[in-house]
Length: 165
Image 1 (tube, rainbow, N blue to C red):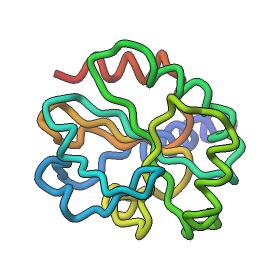
Image 2: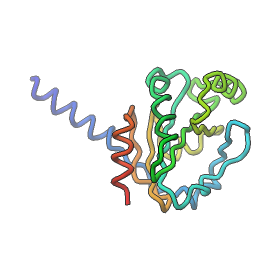
Image 3: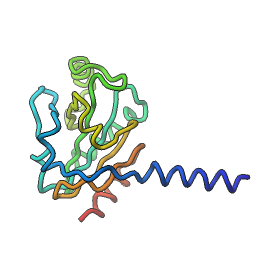
Image 4: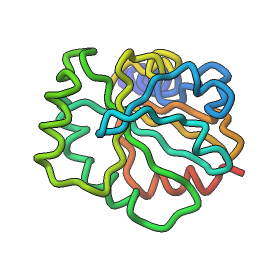
């Protein structure tokens, strides 16, 4: 019986842990996504074209997300051949509204953590984000390589980003 539970667990991990979203190119499709920075200025993901990009979707109510924020901030401040961006979706899935989120986040003192707001949830929906945290990996051409639900440590993120051509 234990053998069958183990096989079932591996099957579930394979089906959820190695999720690949629909074909997407952030350079070509970025006009479809209204993202704002914390100054509520519009940001185009196409500005990142030519660079590999790691995106972490997170929420203020997610203890795993909050526990990993300092690590993601450290990753963002390190010298890598990829960009690090985090995205929050205000007013969705129990998240604070935009103003409340910005006020809350500014109180954390995480000035090196790049945060964008996906106010209408269009990017999260396009990438099939179903839970938090979720990571998305893009190559330098802006092509989506992989979407991975769950927490990843910085070594795993860096290793995967280094494997992307």
